[in-house]
Image (cartoon, rainbow, N blue to C red; front, top):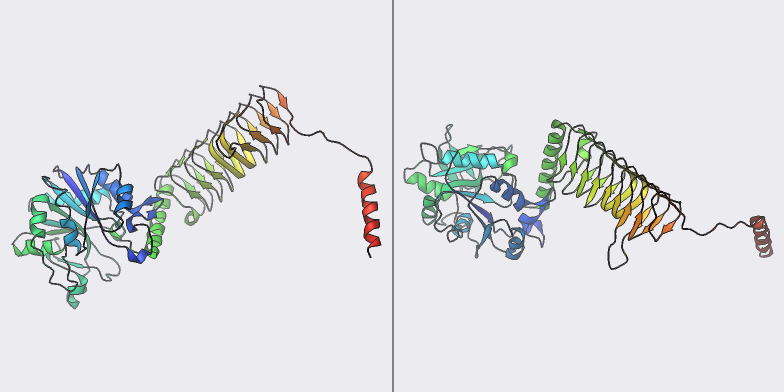
Length: 452
């Protein structure tokens, strides 16, 4: 593997007009994460010493998105083609002596291993001037072509607009991704002209210039999925679908059971243990961890939650960020939790809201229980001790503490702390009036008759 320093130049200056969006194209998310950040995650695995993002419009959005990633922003204005775009990184790469990867912000799923393979090929004994990443799609469409020998030595690079019919029939397509030594990159770019159908400075021409100089250039290939570009909402949806299909397969390969895989939606960082059962129509938002042997029942929506071994969720449950379910805890149908912990073996089986709450081991939360955690200005916590029993249709007005083993009677509105092992009843007294209902019906029936 190449030991030379690595820099990444990521092109993201396109206007993205086909997206028809105020959000920059490369910031549209797949699996809950912006395209550009998917790509940067792979770049991080290379320990790149410099990372340059080339922008046009939407500079402020990109600056915010890459804050803290170590990326430098360079502006391409006007936008005169891919070769011209890469030239804008020259100042940011001043003094850099190493290998440069040229990537695209709207091509988010290039694996780190593929990037390493490009760098490794650049460092092989024949010392190619440029390494191009190619692919063979089922339909070549209007991709540029890489004309190369079976050994991978390139004889010509050509954009589709400028290709002859015979060149368009060549199956190997150009992904646009390249690896070039820093000492070659800008020297070659300075010689690129714009005598072509688009009147632009093509990045691919650095290959043709190097070949004309008598130097070799090489191509390696990858799966079309790895280099799929995203330019429209339809393409975004298609790539999301392909990513999800691969993630579902991985989950099953790693020992999870998905009853109806096509209905389960994962986030980019969902973590799932072995022997986890996931029923149909489950959505995982970001930052979810599920330990071994947990059960996620149908139609549940989960984000920002930690679910321990043997815990059960749903059906029709919603877990919001900050939720922790300990071992064998159970959240049932139509229960919502937020910033709350359910202790070992604790249960909230039906129709409940637990927000800003801590529920002790073995506690039972009855149907219709609500922790009233917000007064319109501030949030407050509810503490429920181990083994406590909260009766159905109770409102716990925070801040409040229910002691270990305490019982809250059904229908109570609890506004003060309840001691351990105590019974709290906070409801109006029931009054019964004998025969009142019969007399009421007789009076009302008579009134109704009079109006006929």
